[in-house]
Amino acid sequence: MICGSVGGFNPEQVTVVQIFKLGLMIVSLIELFALLLAVLVILKFFVFLLFPRLTVNLATFIHSKNLLLQLVLLLLGGVIFYLLLIEISVVKIYASMLFGSFLFAFTMAPFSPQLLEAFKDKFHQDRFWSEYALVWLVWLFLSVWVLMELLFG
Image 1 (cartoon, one colour):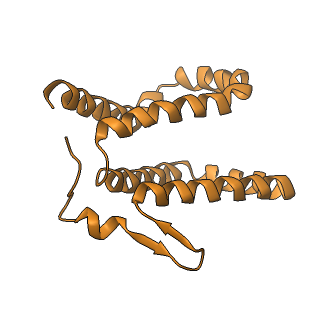
Image 2 (cartoon, one colour):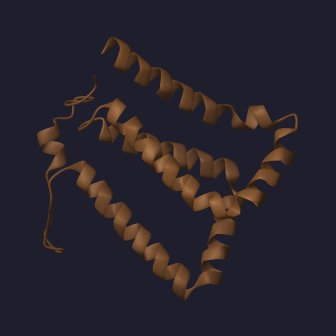
């Protein structure tokens, strides 16, 4: 199980973060990530509520750079994953991803007819598998890692 000291970092040095201006004491990286996500979700909600056109224009611009977006998301996800491994195991992270997957599916369910149509059109194109290969490799790698942890500890 990978937990504790990772890459030469000492968790006691890395995880205690004090945010004096907000009057908060963040005890772990997990709490810091939770705080960051909570603030970003609330901020996104109000920006979307007050400036819906800005939100759509920003999303259109970001998603127009698809390869760059994928690389940035993979890099950020990798950094978060690495930092989470300091405090918790890959099995616990993967179990949390199950919750996140269901939450994401719930979020996207109202758009499922449009998404399915787009997916069907894309699926039959020759380059679909080459464009999607990195996504499958990441999920397969994590799945094998979790199985190895569970079966061989």
